[in-house]
Amino acid sequence: MNRPKTLQRAIKLILFAMPLAVIGNIVYTALTAGNTGFQAILGIPWFWLALALFFSLTPWIFAILRVKTWNSFFNLKLSHRDLFEIVLANDVAAAATPTAVGGGYAKIGLLIYHGVKPGLSASLMVIGSLEDYVSMALVVPICWLLSPPEHISLQILFNKIFLSASHLNGVLPVTVITVSSAAIFVWAIPATRGFFIKTINFGWWQKKIVKPLKGVFYDFGQAFALISKGGKLLFAMNVLLAAIQWIMRYSIFTIMAAGLGLHPHPVSFFLLQWLVFMFMNFVPTPGAIGGAEVVFALVFKGTVPPELIPVAAGAWRFVSTYLQLMIAALLMIIIEKPSLKSKHRASVSPS
Picture: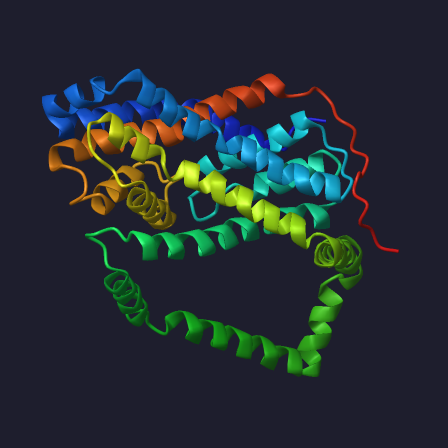
């Protein structure tokens, strides 16, 4: 059995697009940084660059441990190689879609590919997202209270968000109400309702769509029921692992800033990098290519010297994303298996 085609396309896209992104990264840096910026980046000691790369790649270990926790809990019998592949696929697929979409679909696809039932696969993806959200919901407020970034005010940030929301017009809700009302009206008339019933083969939908979906939702609900009974401590442990994972990922530039001769405050710089990743969700390009550097420059304006902003953005993006994704794509090619059993390993199933 071959890997899902969408994942194969994502790997090819990474191997094709990432070198182009790196070239664009270099061109952007060259046009905006000047000689001072390049001299600064060339002057970073190898120790700091190696440490930044360590912080970029080590989060994979914590991600594997998190998936391994549920692998044992649900008795899925996935190998360490399978777990590593699933974690890598999540990052690779995320780079092939806008940041807001993420790579969860690849995680579901590979879990199913390795024999896990669709409902349980979906629940594992949701559980992983919940672990991420809970960890950041705990870490970020505490860090902001301890050491808020000096040039960013939460009140101003929230005001901007609410101001943007107030500018939304009523076109979307009006459209939804109109379409819904029309559908209800058409269905309420016996003649038109009978026409649709005869035209649409409800038996096919019931057999091919509704029944499989019921099984998916059943497995999905059963997974959460089992966790609520015996997996709460495991969930809490995974929240801790997720916190460590994201703290490392949001500290890559902190290390590079130290290598540039700056004196970054670890907590403040962590929060600024978290903000960068949050705003990247609004960049519509795959993996936020072309927009991440701009977001970085806006967020770190006033914290990093102006002459270093372009080269800092380029170096951060290269280590935290481009190099990481190229390594992930190459590793996935190396560990790919020619065939796998498709037998369901999931213990959650309808009785």
